[in-house]
Image (cartoon, rainbow, N blue to C red):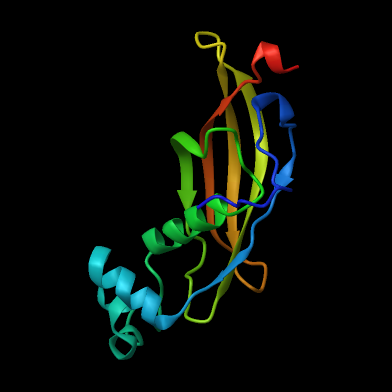
Length: 159
């Protein structure tokens, strides 16, 4: 669920600025969570079997990239980037996993505004292009994504 904290400000397109950054809380990654997610959605040995994972490309248990993406979404939903109406994506231009997520990692997200574009055809909204970087506890990026987010514009009556 999105944060219910009264200090969280819901953002309209007009509230965003180029270069603006938004952070998140953290989530710890356990071996049990890695294996549970993988058993359901990505049952490859290096995600589900700690012993077998030692002989793979990863050299040990590693979270699925899709697990990392799901954890990133969880952190975004609970983070400081809170557009009015929710986090509505219209697509992603780039998604990379520069290093694996391992058991014991503690992840956090940083969202940076790269571009702000009011819609020409729908004056009630616009697009914010954002870079969403997920970091581990050593501040190393484990996922980098550029996303296009639909963000409502401030209604004329609420100026």
